[in-house]
Image (cartoon, rainbow, N blue to C red; front, side, top):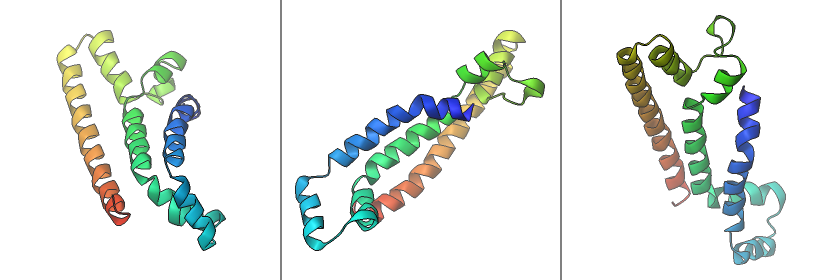
Length: 136
């Protein structure tokens, strides 16, 4: 399942990162060349700090996607043997529409939303600290 989701979304996130890299001005690259910065030094000290807001966006989007996986387990295994591939979304669906316990399914959906919110706030806290370190 992880391989399928990574394959499905890697191009989408690669476009974000590519646009971030291409937004680095030619003058910055020229200054790096004049200062003698090449290879990994340029990557870690110039490129990554300059695309940190883009990487933050990609990380938050990927985290949100990780909590919303429904299609892959539903279509491939239906939850798998002994519920081994059941996700939050699939369990909410099964509770609400298969077992017809819509109130319990709604409560699970609210708990899922709270969990996603708290997780994204924690991620935002740490990425904001990292972005402030690099001046964003």
